[in-house]
Structures are given as structure tokens and as C-alpha cells.
Length: 334
Image (cartoon, rainbow, N blue to C red; front, side, top):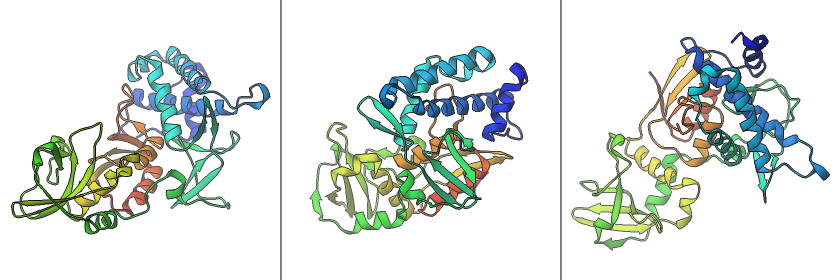
């Protein structure tokens, strides 16, 4: 931490990235570097090109690669904590910024979002803020403490999150259906509604007893989702609209089904001072997952693919927890 005139310490102070009570030194360094390269990638969106043309995706990704490689040369002890292929990091950050609405995409060009902010408790979440704005960073997401007077956005609209309670989503889709008799059970998969979900989210047979649940076709190319109802030995089904595939909207329905049956697992978190570890126990819809990934660090940065094990700035975690609990997701401290 003390090398190069305390560079990492200065970055950590500027971005308000604090070390956890029992956090390994290398993990802390890797979090600082990840956030630093995300900020420099974000800053590249303001690079002035000829005729003020927005920067290209290649320009954004190359900036991240160059900065990452520079840091890894300066701090070789953390090299093993990042993917061997630097394009994995640049691709992941581009995808994260794009899917979270931090950047807009036109053909081969990208631009920053218009400025938006939303307050949840003591936290102000930001999009499209100017580079001179002093912000704190959790993962790659920008935030400040709630001390500002400004026109505020709705947090759900700002990040494309659902503001509908999972129980209400389930009631809407399970109670308004046109039922047809169903015979061919072998071509379909059925939502697993009883833990352990480590065995998978889907099973090859319907639930036992009289139930209402979700099934889907096994054919990935032309996959369809259905509500099914089992009465004795007879099955009835009703097809859900095809658009629920977009943004994994069907996850709201499957999570709602589990909530109705009191089977949706509680996500587990552990506070270690300035940081909080979160283990997500059931796959989230895409928008909620993108929001979490934007404002957290992957516990395993070597793959950049850890959706389920995340690290947050503690104050940000509790704001996100509040957002998700309002729509029916559950958390417990361990």
C-alpha cells in the first residue's frame, strides 16, 4: 500500500474505499484497483475526439486494459486476483455500465447517461455525474451521502428495477389464466419449489399434491414459460407471454411463486466494519442483479463472474437491502 508515494492509499481516500475489519490486504488492493480502473474507464467517455464525436467502445475498453496492465505491473502481488486475459475485465465493465444505464450506446459509439440521482436513506445513487463531482465508489457505482438539495429520480426508474411486490406479480400471472388440459409432461421442466436449490432451479417432474406453479419447455431455442395447475393426477396449463424472456422478467414470477409458498431463500450477509459480504441464495432478475453488480465487488475477481458472492461498502449495502426488501426479497445476518 505504501509503494509509489502511497498511490493506492490516495485512491482509496479519494473514492472512500475502506478496508474491512478482517479483510486480507491483497483483496483490499484488488478492490481499490478495480474501482480505479472503472473510474478511469468512465472518465474516458469525456475524451474529446474530432468534431466532438462520442468515443468508441474500443476506446473505452482499451483505456481499461491499459490502466489495468499498468496497475498490475506496479502491484504484481495482485495479478493472480485478476483474469489472465485483460479483455475479460474490459468486456465485463462495458457490459455492466451499459446494462445499468451508466452509458448509452449508438452504433459503435458510447456516451455517458444524462445526470440523475436518487436518494435511499442516507445514500444518493448517481448516474451521469460530471467528472469534477466528488463521489464515493462501491464496486464501480458512484454515490454520495444524502446532504444535497436537487431534483431526484425514482430509484426504481433510474436503474430499471421492478417496484412491484413479488407476491402481487405472482398473483397477477397465476390467477388470470386460460387453462387447457395438459398431457405431455416429459418435454417440460418444472420449477423447484422445495430446497435445496443447489440441485438446480428446475426439476423433471411436477410438484406432488395440488399446486399452482411454473413450468417451461426444455427447448432452449424456442423456450416458453407457463403457469401450471395440478389437481389430483390431472395437469392444466396456461402460456405466459413470450416477452417475459426479456431481462429475465420470468425471475419475478418464479421468485413470486416461491414467496407465495414461503420458500424463497433469505440472502445472507455479514458485516465486517466498512464492508459487507453478501451471498445471494436465489438468482435475481437481470435489472436487480446488474444494480447489485454495479455497486459491489465480486468476491472472486479472478473470473469476474461471481453474481452470487459480492462485497459492498456497508452503507451502500443497507440502502440496496432496503430497496429489495420493499419488493419482497429477504435478507438475514449471519
